[in-house]
Length: 443
Image (cartoon, rainbow, N blue to C red; front, side, top):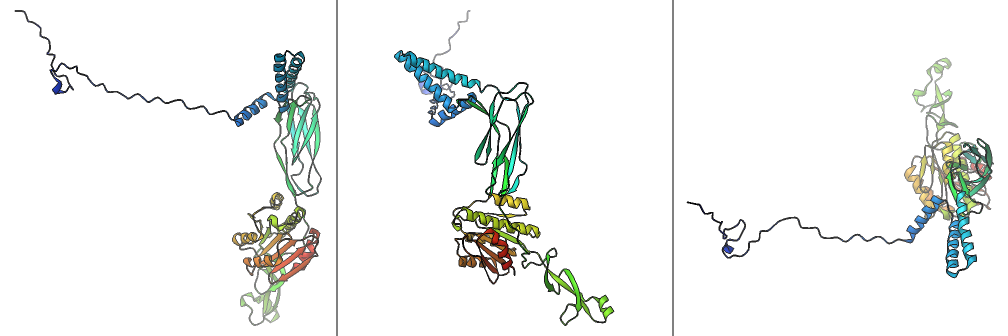
């Protein structure tokens, strides 16, 4: 008997189908799961071209090509003439436009290549006083194997620029040029960098090459020598001896007879045995003054620039005296305190100082009190505008054990020196009067 194959029932329930729909003949739909396609995002908008971008690209192109503004103006004028000449069929305009473009292209030929030079800048002294004549030297050598074309070296010196013309240099040829450094006023003069300029004679093109770094020349303020020593109230082993005798100190002076009340530890027994009387040691008092030179930078304290320059010179004179006496020094301004400086570094800092807005001389006293409380001598230098009574009132912030010297630079007024308690007020008409004022102010 032959087996008849049977077809699978069409109403079989497939996996995942709803039993209520079985046998209804409805098609069975099987769900297919998968990742949901990402939603389409429009491309980001391109940022519009700004005028700053155009200028930047033009500047980059000018640097790469060596074209200057005059060259670009000539090129633009030539192109405009060519367009107008073609539009109007005007031969003269077309010739003029072509000549302008051709001249700009010829100017670019002068910028091709880089000169083979060795440039050395020499400044003999980096620290000079106001009025000292100072010159530097610029040495240029051709290190290439061919003769160089004529060129120009530009050397910035402070706010000015010295232009040095260079003729054609044969291989290994050397030329030296000297330049003058301005020292008429206290300042920090920046010299360099030396820049060679390759370009056409008409100034249409030019390429610059840096050859040296930047050198700083410190023009120190004018100073005067001050007499004597400015002694304060700090006793110290390494201090300076004075004419005042003391029963107990570090500097031995002489022997004297014992008087009731003397410390028996200072009895010199060997001399007492020799003379038959008690002899004690006599000492000289030693003092070491911790000096704070405070310079007022407030713009409202000074009538003009010359008055401020005199004030800086007064402060510099006291700074130099402190270093000569080997006393600890702090240079104080309205915004900062400089300690542990050498004489040269202190004068360099004074060369940098400029007047400031939005400050007052009373702020200077607060800075000294908060940051230099151990100073035994405080020299405050200001201009003619602050009142003496206000300065004396502000000096009370420094304490009774601190000797305060208030110096007001006041041109056109006579020299006056007044001492009340621990505060000495000086009205100084000119810098050369400072030594006489210090002698009158000495205790």
